[in-house]
Image (cartoon, rainbow, N blue to C red; front, side, top):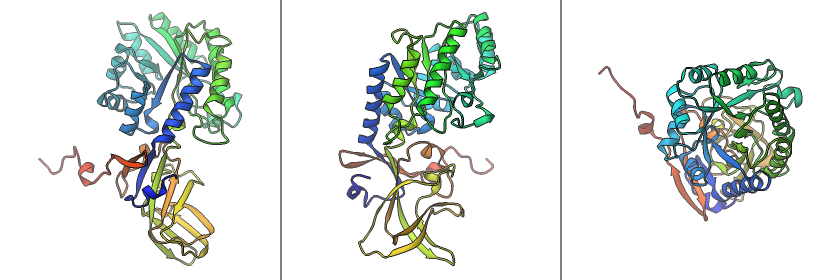
Length: 398
């Protein structure tokens, strides 16, 4: 991480958001969109990282707020997001917030049969988007997250559920404004987005749809060298969509989360103990795997070290572990590496996506979050204490 001298004495554990990296990612996305499809909406995905400072940053940069629950919707309103600047997705919308968003002319993509029923029962008729479920695995073998089990979101194209939904909406006077095409991919390859665009075009032609927007979702790589860049994705998407759609008439919606804020965040920890057992030397840090890998499915991390002195022996094997009482709170093993000492700092880089939202309140509470800008650290969220933990709680029988 740059500016290591600045963070050398910071209280750990903590997250640090690099402003320059965030700006770089966002401007790269803007440049690609303006080049390939200049009629667009960027929806920042709250579920990826709902840090209020970030929400405010993207709102001030004219992004919409992409939310998937009433709680996220209300968070955006609480932070001053304009009533009409939401993209409301997901199957768990409340009825009240669903119709409020429609009344405010937000982008609303339906994803459940109960939403379909709400629309049909409503006396007022709206325009909505539809989340499309299609067999991405058939087109991109071994690239989807769900594999042969298939994704669970949206209305299925292949089995006729999508057509049935379109017909029901039309027969009840509800217009289909857009298609929400997001799929969960484990490769984030260009092929995924080419297929998303091809299937969207196919559906538009097959059902003779006149759409206001196509929402391709998110899931792009971002801030990663030797991986597809925003310009690569937008080139593939635009070349396919332009075979049938006019950019001046149809808005392209993208919903980036991980690609914008994954790389700008680092998690700073300090070595608090080392111990030798029959099998290993364990290096204990004051952070946890749950803070950088809450699903505990990673086998490597972007990391670097700040040593407290230069006098080091080479140790054959050292297992880096978190502070929790779980045995599997082990992050990685260093072989034939400099000996770790109490006071050394281990920095985990590119950890901004999902880590903060999924960090549990387990043993220790949420850590400090700093903004690194102009070679200075600014606290943008204070660590939780017992006071925050018990807020809104009721204690005793009264």
